[in-house]
Length: 313
Image 1 (cartoon, rainbow, N blue to C red):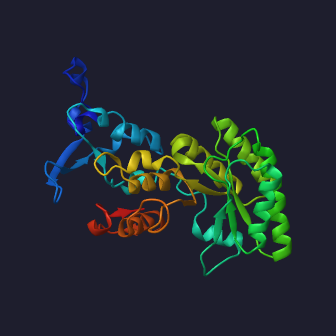
Image 2: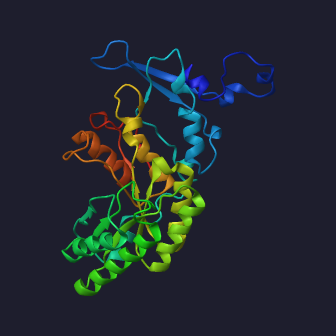
């Protein structure tokens, strides 16, 4: 039923079934195995013909495989643990705007991690005081500072004012330290047009990087912004706000490794991956597993790290 609903099936037989070759297009469940230590829980492996999916569209991919089936009354719970994307389909996506090496080249920083922080309080500061905090952090030795996920364009700090004061802070810190500095300016907005306008402003100010909330903003918006960043030389940081609504429950939803994989296709130079310490939930081996999924060209199947399929990017 899961394979059928997410491909060619519906709740009844229709006469138009005879107008196509359903065997060519239907999803197939090819294996089922019990979940170790759990009663009445199973892992089902479902394969889909590649022709079911529009090229270069994460939106269409997700609409197909998770769009309706999670609402089935017959299912007590359903969770998408992982998916393998065939290389032929991967090649229809642009991927990250730039990537690790280009980012290091732009920053002229090699052989070490990049150190950054989020400005706090994330809401309530005026644009001028926000810029002051950015300067103090960058002047003190950080490579980056960043907006938090819900810093957009509120009455106490409109986006254009924030962009201007932050750019001033970055340039001042650069001139005093001799290092390239940056701040993740959150370009997330209520419409794609407004989002791209903010990205254009960041480009004109000469800042190296912007940011997007890819789940709340949407995959179509994210792919559009990633294409803009690639064309105009902006790095793109991705925030995963709202991910826990989708991935935190262990028996229902979508695992974050899947959200990370599709983000790699949609486009982003780096992504909040979670950590094995700190205030937010995360498991060490599983977290390291999807970090590798975002970073490496080829990842072997390793169930101990939650990687169900070998993935060739």
